[in-house]
Image 1 (cartoon, rainbow, N blue to C red):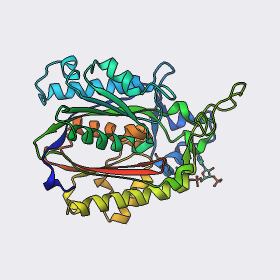
Image 2 (tube, rainbow, N blue to C red; image 1 turned 90 degrees about the vertical axis):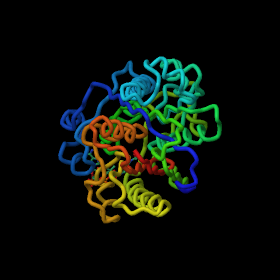
Image 3 (cartoon, rainbow, N blue to C red; image 1 turned 90 degrees about the horizontal axis):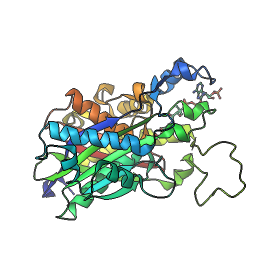
Length: 345
Ligand code: UT7
């Protein structure tokens, strides 16, 4: 659907983030792992990651990020409500994108968040689609608002506690990930601002390239099993890397072409923060200066579904996004999946 055919817009009226206070540098990891700061930085751009203490679960970070998003909307007078509690009552959908949800099968983490923030009038659901979950969640939120006159606001959150699902003896994966959450409050408006187009895609033939095998119906835990290594992600890094560079490049090209835009029309590209080298390679292919891509991976590492909403919140609060700016968010991840959204700020 082109922008001109929209009768309503889906505007982001609040952003928030939450990261655990514990910050672990590459040098600290190198004390117990055969790795070093130079390798991690030169291969990924990562300098540190935030790691949740044992008592912090996915929903705890999601709730904090959600409250911060509501509070931003109130502070900026983007809504008539004056308190977080009042505003939470106007939320019609709570959507949590995550692959490290509080509970294995049920309930949805979104239900825990819905209760904690007092969004009593909202439906709640999870979008479990790895690093693409936030973009899939954003489109799900906009879609659910668009199909019903009774829905006006959706809280879309990306939240992860990845540190709990990596093999801390596997240097090829554990150094890459971090914990955190980001949230946006989406409102259906008549404004030309907001999401103008989203594309979503998948290539399930790469499902095995980034996978957490144990615990599902394919490899269920059985009575008497001994846990040798807790459930953790396994990755064919090179395959995911190659997929990611192509996905970022093609998603950006497709979105721009569909909207009849040039790359110069986009103020900033906000990519999923998985590896700075993926961004550099995509920038080269697109012939775009690297500086047009926002990167904060040095501080947070790869927070999967949380990386784009954390980036949006940092940009929003720093004043880097001006009203009317066109930004392009692009994600990719396990599945393999990808997606991108063009957003008029
Ligand atoms: O959110 C989406 C999910 N993930 C991604 O997007 C990740 C995509 N892939 C990547 O970012 C890169 O493939 C990695 C960063 C994971 C790996 O970088 P690479 O340049 O593809 O390295 P490699 O796996 O080919 O490994 C090269 C060498 C190996 O040593 P040998 O066999 O050449 O002696 C690894 O054992 O680097 C070694 N290595 C390390 N050395 C020090 C792997 N991890 C580390 C480490 N520290 N942490």
